[in-house]
Length: 362
Figure (cartoon, one colour):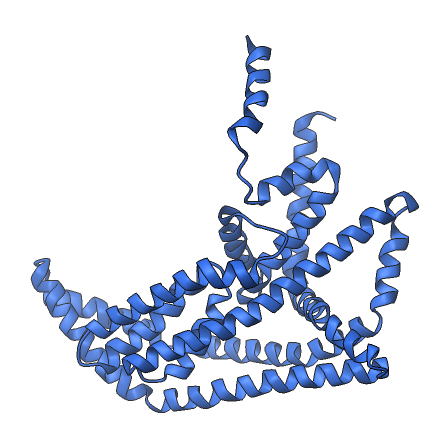
């Protein structure tokens, strides 16, 4: 077929596939989370099975420990958040005074009409704080969906762990016998990628949470535990989460401290923590066999947010890593796998290609 026909078919197919992913979000997203959690917990379940524990009991016990740890973390965050909410009116009042001082400085420094600047800031603040009835309804609907997912995911994880051999055998039977070795390599490498990435991500989040909390305590910033944990969770989102994570404690420092220098101190310390995270923690703990270059990492984070919201931002990198594993094992798709990676070709490797091209056009 001509190239334009192939390109049209591929583009239409991609459009339909992405539309299906968006429409079936409520079904697909919990299932993907469940698959990743099941792959992460699989070695723990196997450990209990090797200890002569019944498989059903081993899965149940592993899930119980996971839910207990998650619930304890959620309870800690909820307790800190309730304290933060109680102090919210005082913080809003202090922040309003600071905002008024800033508008006066802005109007004086840039020779603007103070009344107009103040009206613009007031309108923006009112619009951001006002929530209509429809928005409340949407929020309640989102909370209801979140609770539904929380109930479905443990069930999915249990069934995936229980039927994992059946599912793997099904994948093998789908392909012809000549592809069995390749299929086994893809399954094994995909499991390794997910386990290393998610386990490393959990360890990284714990370390970053401790560093954030200790730094905020040292500066005397209020709600240090809550802000430290939220910052560590946001840091899981590559490149973008770190920016939001530092903005929250800076805003709290501006609203609760007598001088704005504390916000700059927070910025400086968080920058040091990011350097430690990016140059020590991530290479040693989070890095896996599959390397994704920064260009596509940032792109898929935004694409995941546009497709599935916050869940898509969390899932984007591991899904892209799995796609790269598949591309690297299929001959026609290997160039695309190379494009997703971060291996920069040396001059000696690309020069023969350039020379061959020059010979053809000369």
